[in-house]
Length: 203
Image 1 (cartoon, rainbow, N blue to C red):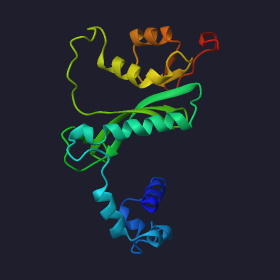
Image 2: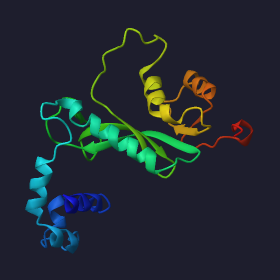
Image 3: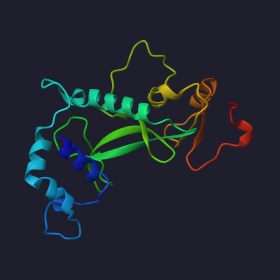
């Protein structure tokens, strides 16, 4: 299992159109000897098919939600985030059966699972929220609180009141949200823009 995890981490840093090409000599452009030396491609796929990160009776989002939560906790423990943070979405190719899998015609990987991610300025993941379809509206939630506003505050929860600067695009940003974040000692700005020094919070 340690070898399997090591190859999985290494695979994330190697660009390859097909996983089997990493283990096969049929395409020398993508072949990496360390994969086949460690274990066969067939054995790697057997372990991958049997890998489970939840209870056997879990369904849908519950199959991975606890695992994602454990990962994000570890990410935050081992890395201290800098002043500037970024919020955006990420798409993961997935062709299996899942009711919240999305089909995006304009993307090269058309069948995807969508993730909302809070990262550092250089891309280190700090918090993740997986899109799992339309959520049931909470009757206790204030009517003026939009879904995107709730999403941003949920991802930023561990980093509020610390003087961070959050960069995001127009889809998430709004005047009301900016005022809320400012009350929580967090500045926000559009991606590609800079925050003037006169507006920066004093530490």
